[in-house]
Image 1 (cartoon, rainbow, N blue to C red):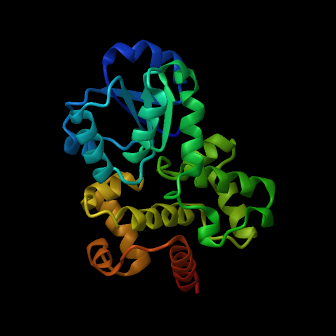
Image 2: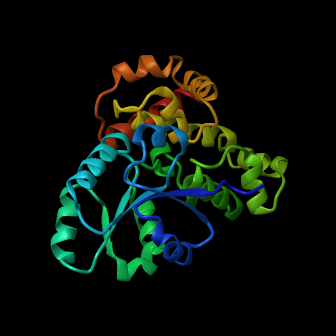
Length: 263
């Protein structure tokens, strides 16, 4: 079983479909939508790795669209692809709109590298260090499993997907984790997803269904069950309590919760 496709939402004219098909490699599933797309519907139907704007001209309608997307998709990195003409001025304005990276149409062949760079630097992604886990402490097989979870926890739904990539069976993996005094991989995956949801839920524009989907859960019911298992409370209740948390406070929170659960 393979990890699910990674969706890249591209906003712009479909005439660029051919160029993007050549530029984007097969690990990505890119979806092209016009600037007239219903943003609220877009937010509920799919989960995206990156949003790409194809900008021939920064019109008032396009600027208004980008601003609205920024409200609904605060955690998703964005790329603007602009015309070569007046590129410096357009790039500056894109930055003012909160677009994370800018390429010109002549640089569009570099878009895959740019997507990977943005994903690696995405501050909303949970890291092993947030959970107090250091890969250096473990054998090679354990390190590999932890790296897979850390890199793709939003798309992994079963441990079978991890063992398939590693070409080992689940029993072997669970035994290795136990031998090295690590909590089971299934529980680590759950921690990643639930802790990610704490960051997402700080955005008032998302409902619970959105949060569940954007945190890698298959449905809202499963998300609420996992959340309650960790916090002994519902996402709705916890959401009312939390405020904007910096990364240090989040890391301390995560590690304290894990210590309490594993006693």
